[in-house]
Image 1 (cartoon, rainbow, N blue to C red):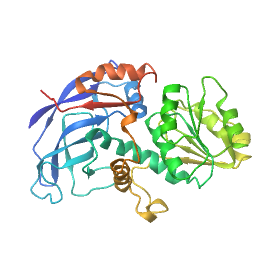
Image 2 (image 1 turned 90 degrees about the vertical axis):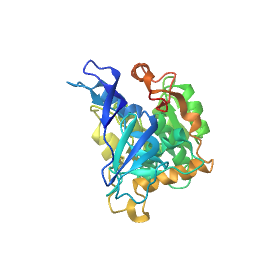
Image 3 (image 1 turned 90 degrees about the horizontal axis):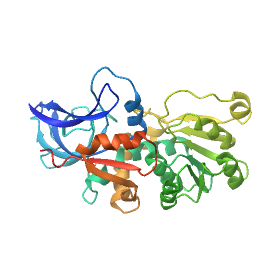
Image 4 (image 1 turned 60 degrees about the horizontal axis):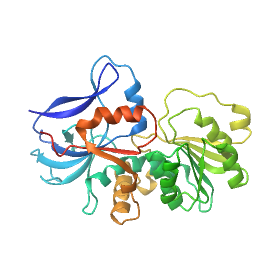
Length: 334
């Protein structure tokens, strides 16, 4: 056993530094020394604001180096760089005997993709799966409400799929400027103009596909109103709570399709038809980054030592201004 640092959420509602004991790997496990973790701001802010009676772990995206392998492990060797599903902590064990789309996942990071870049493969998979589910066709109009990391990546994949126009909506100009670089053909600052009306004006009656990637559940009603008759609204964000919608005018009479994008394991059809499992999506994201077609470096605003986690979570909790992609560096665990 060895003790490694980790980030915890305290009962007082704060992020703090703690530690966890990590054992040597069992026969089917690999021990990964973590070098970078990424904050998933929507999910983690939800956790940050929940009540708890004891310290709890947080986070789920990590990149590191295989430090030791169990006796039965065949496809990993010491020194391999891997993307794993792990909380924010200095090392973790992964049982690779029965890999699935989520548990037991340890994806090899290719040369040419940095540790920081590799962390984007998990949220990239979320965005990509949402675009696969909503299926915007070539030339179909798309609106993406909110331009956090998943929103930025959704904008990119919608544009790559051939959608036009691709309209990015957010409250912050700094995020909308990044959206332009990620494929948005038009941007709307919802703090200054009516986003629903702007989408209707730009599309001549509403977007064929609307992605709800906002944390505020009330934005969902605007997404429904911004959709064209017979359009699709895909919920790709992680909004807490509930929202009131008008079923008759906003859903029924407009014959909208409403999709949820939250799959731990893909169903057999229709997405698995082309083998687009979560690991396959993540490998595709790696490939796009490695070929220079997906620029995730521009999405990182903070790449800081893990010891600054309390400060980072306070910043995130205060609102979206001044940050976008937040990474923790674990290379110095002294």
